[in-house]
Image 1 (cartoon, one colour):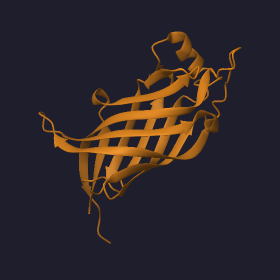
Image 2 (cartoon, one colour):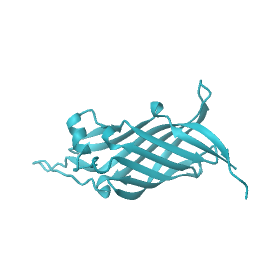
Image 3 (cartoon, helix red, strand yellow):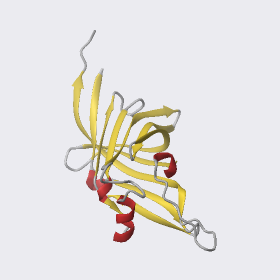
Image 4 (cartoon, helix red, strand yellow):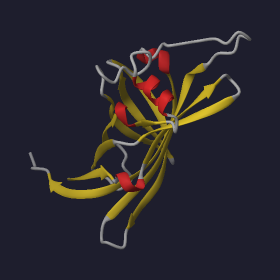
Length: 182
């Protein structure tokens, strides 16, 4: 059986998160620097092993004061925890896909399950084989030690505990290696 290795194409991928602010609107942020890979024994990626990491210092919410606050000890504590990471597997059940594994932020690891929309595999104009995925899920930031909280005088929560993760990922096939027979 052969194993195909795939790596994230950062020019065709996006890693974002959304969180409610004051309960009335949503703030979107991005991780601008990230990397990841998958190893799969099948073209449908069922059972593929996935690794991913993002640099906390690359957070961009289009507002530098907020970005600096997110990088501070109040939230991600980038000085002591420079990356978030994920390690898990793709699980296929009929036509539905899940990404199941361990997410680590701020030194805390928790099991997560994310929904996956597998877009398929295609060749690009340069002879590369690509695979596309839309990944979405929710986590509670406080489960990972991101516990800063504030309430306005009117009683509105400044930052929601629930965070939506949204990833649009394109993988590039790197190599195929034959496994030795036993």
